[in-house]
Image (cartoon, rainbow, N blue to C red; front, side):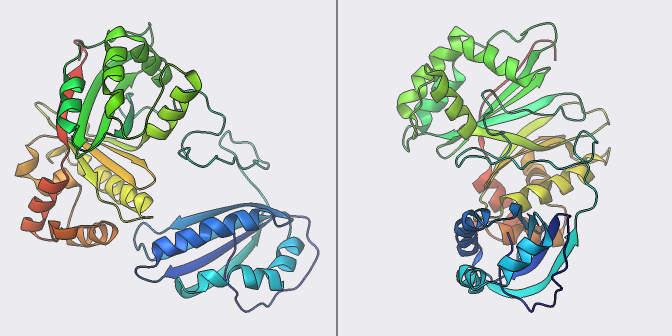
Length: 387
C-alpha cells in the first residue's frame, strides 16, 4: 500500500512488468497506534483499487520510529493513474497527522522473482482472516507448521488468560496432573513441557522431537490431559469448546505463540536454570522487540563461557515471551535473563517497552526491578525420562 502524497516526476511509459513501490516514513512519537489504526482502514480500501496486488507494512528493528510501506502493482500504469488521482489524495489525508517525515519513494520494475522452492515466477499472496496469527496459513486445520531449532527440537507455545482471582486455582490444576506418555510413534516424541504464569496469563511451551502436530494431537487425546483442560475451562476469560473440532481449531489458532527464534549454544551446558519473561510491549512494537531479543541471543549463545545456554523467543503480534536456559540463576545475571547486552541495546529495548515504574534498563537497579516485575512464575516443568 502506498500512502502520502509526494512530488511526482514520472513518465507514463507503457510497461508489461509488475511494479514494486517502497515508501520510507518516520512516525511521530506517540502516534504509532494511531498510524496503525489508520493503516488498517486504508489497506482494505487500497486492496480494492484495480491493479493492486499486495502490500506490506514494516518497522525498523533499530529505530521504531522508522517505517517502510511496500506495495506491488500489476504494472506502472495502474499505479501511476491511482497515485495521481484525487481519490488517492483524499484517501491518505488521515495518515498525514501521524507522519513527521517522508524520506523518499522508490519504484522498481519486477524482473525476476524466486519462490521458497527456488522456482522463478509469481506467488499469489495469501490473505489471513482477522484473528488468525500470521504464522498460521489461511484454511489451516491443524497446529501451525514449526521448524526445528539448531538442535533438531521443534518448539511451540500456547497462551491464554484466566479470570482475575483464579490464578492460584488454575496453577494448582495445571501442576497436579500425571504426565502423558512421551512416545507418540517411531518418529515423534514429546521431549519437554514447561508451563509459566504471569498475572492471569498462562504460557505453555512444548518441545517435540518429530512432528509437532502429531505430538499435540497425541497429548490432547490423553485422559489425564483432557481432565485438566476441562477443569480449567470455567476459569478461562475466553470460553472454549474443545469437544467441537471447529471450535478447538479456532481456539488453538488464537492461542498459538510460535517460536520466532531459537538459539542453542554448542558448548556443554551442565546444570541449567530455566526462566521465562513476558515483555510489556508497546502497541505495534512486537516485531521489533522479538528481533532485538533474537539478535542478542545469537551473540550470547555463541560465547561458550557465557551465561546463556539456550533461548527461544515466542512471539505473536505484541505478545513476546522469551524462554531462556541459563548457566546461572536469573537473579545472578539479570541482563542475560532479560536479553540486554549493553547500554545501546538497553536504550533501544526500553523505547519499545512500557517500563512504567520498573525503571531504566541501562542501570543495574532498573534491570533488577524489571526482572522482578516481568519474570513469569514456573508452574510445572516436565521432561521425558530419556532426556
